[in-house]
Amino acid sequence: MFIATESTPNPSTLKFLPGIELHGGEAVEFTDLDVARERSPLAAALLAMGDVERVLIGQDFVSVTIAPGGADWSALKPEVLGVLADQLAAGAPAMVSAADDDPADDPADADIVAQIRELLDTRVRPAVAGDGGDIVYRGFHEGVVSLRMKGACSGCPSSTATLKHGIENLLRYYVPEVTEVRAV
Image (cartoon, rainbow, N blue to C red; front, side, top):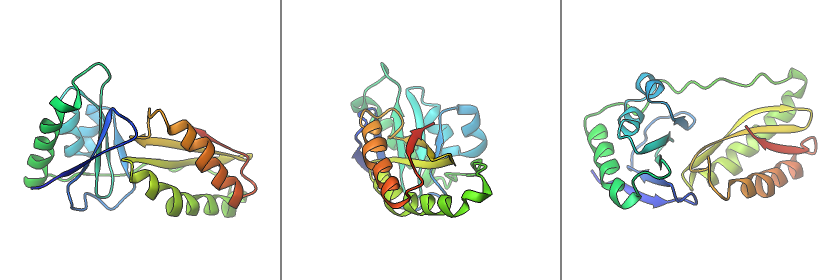
């Protein structure tokens, strides 16, 4: 099985592209081995390697982040490729469940929230997924949009600039009720 790799803006993260759909839902991030064992055999196998700190499973990619001070990618990349190939060839599911808690927004803000989610889903998330990450809507309250950064975006040196100068400006332009965007 051929699995392509791409670098990301986060030097600790590599994006792996197996060329198949892994699951149909929103990208899901794993940092805890016990949680991964319950929800993703693929993420569990990667986190069990020891030097892997975070796994993000997207629709057709897997972003893997190594722990600071651990192994470097030249040593770890072949091992990650081997785990991915073994898991996918064995038919192990990437995800057992992709449920994520939905934020409780004020029903009076339903139209604003719908506009925000539409912009995030059509303009922001595809671009961020291209870099091996994901940005997930976590709420809107009194003009402030809360977003959760996942995968390569989590801990990336350029993520703050992307959040403030890119996403915040986009949302404020199209949705005047938005005054600020914050990472949670």
